[in-house]
Length: 398
Image (cartoon, rainbow, N blue to C red; front, side):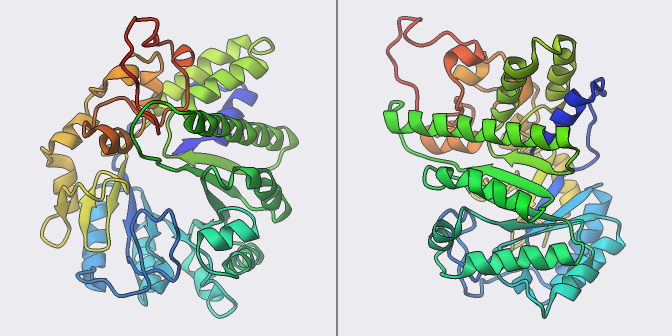
């Protein structure tokens, strides 16, 4: 996760860069259930409104929570499917809270209503993230259920009234880019605490097309929008948190944006910001983030569901995570990672960590190939272009 507001606030307040901090254990994103009441177009877990086989029982979940404490996991994010469809969600939450975990809930919001808002409040989630994919027409179409936008808006209002820290989560696409400014306005209007923008993994082969170039330009515009909005809130003293995920090029791009906007005015602050970004280190799949799916299978993160490294039904997460000799996991933990092409030559490798490996694997079959989803140009990352090298081999497009 890339913390825009946190980084910009340290720049605004002229704070020195702290030493790099090694997390004792990974943040665990836990898909407690695969069942969902919606059929969203971008769902990575391919959830449906049916019961799925072999899901963890309540006792298996609790035993795993005990072991996650041994693994020094600091944060549990309960996700799905739709986690509120698990009848034992509050029992599981209470058990995790009693063990001292920071517990967040990731939901589509449609099941939050007057009947359960008191239970959600009592569960004492540190954060409830509700997915909002655009304005009403787009959101309802994208999530394939008319009226779900208004249900999610009502959930935000109920959570705010109950004093629950609430966030809006948006997955950026070509189709909802035009809605982004008004969604950010809606965030301000409803005094939402946090905004999370997730970059969508596009796949496909071939040369960088005009359509994909347009997507990269939209991504840059969207990121500049978030940077500007976050900076505006900081200067106004508004306490909000803007974060992104799934494209670690956001780090180098933030550095370039700050340099362009404030480099002349605050040149002495740039070194601290750059060091903070290096300390962040970019993509943390297999290091600072892990995933457990609904059947108990352990993955390097939520986008590696095709790559199991163990299962909590028969193995301890703490042992698997610490002692794995899985080649992909060993590569994730290598510093620097063995990335190739543009990523290997990039001047910002220490900041982004080689970006999202799932895109490279999906398009080339090589986990360590250059990330085709990086929206920065060769010139922006300090890489000599293929044309400059006299090489006409095309690079992959997203």
